[in-house]
Image 1 (spheres, chains in turn blue, purple):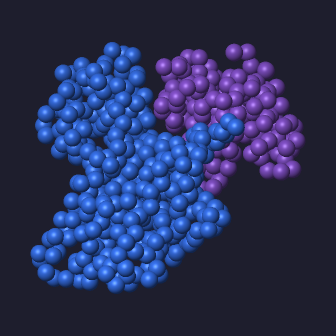
Image 2 (cartoon, chains in turn red, green; image 1 turned 135 degrees about the vertical axis):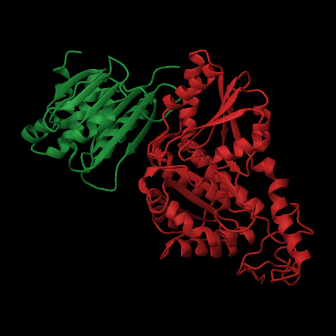
Image 3 (cartoon, helix red, strand yellow; image 1 turned 90 degrees about the horizontal axis):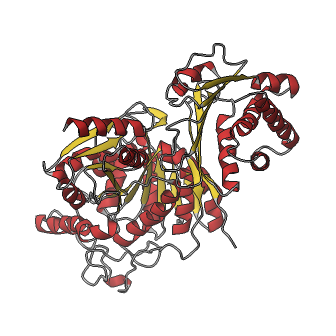
Length: 383
Length: 183
């Protein structure tokens, strides 16, 4: 039977992706432009045997998400800018205790309450550094409705497999836009579950990786399954209890940070478009990359060999991709719906080997292809 | 690059523009085409500038919003400035509501038409809020971007039960209005 193409929004695709990945718990506090996610899950999750709960605020919603995950459930929360700010402290707790969870942040105009119904890409750095202290984090930035579905699934897989919180960075444009999608069949996409302990309860140490089949990733027992363990926001030993021993602190800090480095090849995801012979590169992500790809085609029609490098995984940042690019292109243009955030990483990774320019917009409208085209033409002919 | 059909429906909150855009995009999907529908609206549920954009293509839709409009519908004065200034081609159709738009502007590009969507909704159907579906009928009549059968099917799939006949009549009125225009 031919499968039916549907017209659904990005937020709806996120709901479907989460269900496909096996979400069992959602806690949130509704906020524009993410509210269709709790709306969809309120309707559907109970039918899948899951729980959807609206908490009193975003802080509690993040806490409930962590709590559910500790009981062995695949858990998610969704929010937008102001709510994302509120979640940061608990997000740090999740990151430090390696609690698998997906946090959807549909970026809207900021700072503060900003422009609830307008798009932005202003939370790129907050996704990386919003919570205090060095900590591991993953952020994914899809750019279409089908990709929101697949990246939601991948986000769950990454967080479950490696025990690193995953932030799904959407923006108002792709969250509210509707596009054609055909849902993948069950089994078509990989679905990963977290490692479970193989030792008996009395020998279980929640942060011990000695016998883990996945180096640096501790198997995770579920509360209520007979395994007792302690989690704390304090620096902790492998048995979960607090410590002030600098050597132990440093060892554990290295382990959780090294984990990202060890598995970065599994986490990185980029798309290249027409880069092989490109003289000019556009580096983009999320909704802005749609304008970037359009600009590449238009520039090529006008005789400028442009190409695009698109970051689907933003954090950790794939520096090597930029290093390679910087050696062969005349310049790089980075379109963003902010004052220039990911461009800082691009510049850092380019190490001065090429020039890097931003195309920026903060008037709560999508970046237009023509802005990128004009900027590239101006720079290209100026060289 | 194959040329997409890019349609912008501009007006204000409460005029049903987003629904009209969703219906148009759904109709394209019914024909096996690709479509993207996007929107802007403010915090108000009534009034305040609003738009809905639909891009229809036989192939991949790279940029999901309107980059080079083929048709711009304007149902309100507030939508004139921001939603007509990027019209690039002289063959783009710019359709104003003859009643709700007080002063039709001079534009550098595009062919300007005025059609009485609101008046038809009010006088012929007794339901001013149905102007969006009449406009949708006119857009299909003017562009043939989807067939009349597909748009009717898509309308009926998305409108509230009990309003099917009213919506079918509104679509038909839109088709008829399109016939009054010589392109």
